[in-house]
Length: 241
Image (cartoon, rainbow, N blue to C red; front, side, top):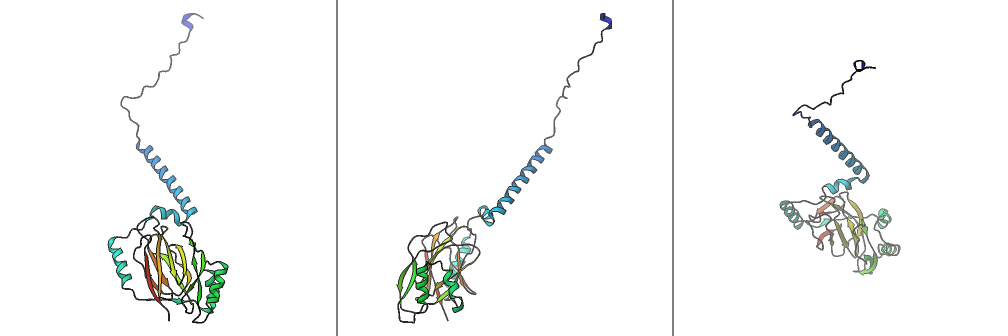
């Protein structure tokens, strides 16, 4: 084939972008942000379902009472008269004993004390060791003689009045001692009615800061304690009919 018969095919020219042409980034950024929000929401939802209230508690986990609230609590507690205790009925005695977290010997000893007439010494269980942080209820009872008086049991309710942040208190009544991690859901159990008419509450652990916020009740009666610190002990005057 001669030179004239040859077909010449021009090479394709590369496309040269227009000078100064800009690509919009707003749709890309918007889609990325939306995807991130969806992912975070999904993770939060899964965490909330698997951990329950604990997940949200760690989002806002510390008691946050202002000075006015703290002062109001202290004043209300200072002017509080004796709180009337709801006694455990004979029908509920066995249930109450089971819920006191006692060892078998201590439980048997207390059950016998409930039948001891006035004038004879009674033996009430008390703890031997310091409470553990992760224990919801920690009781290591022993036997300790108390003043001569008939032993009665009363229902006690403890709860965290503010944020459920791991506050821990110890309650002492007539030789019986119990350490409780407070929750916003009231915890009900029985204690021996104190001979001196005073139930002692001691701050053991300030969960996430802000002070220990505890409420104590019995039946329909309730008392909100001042914001407490670790190691502080406050006495609540109580009475029975």
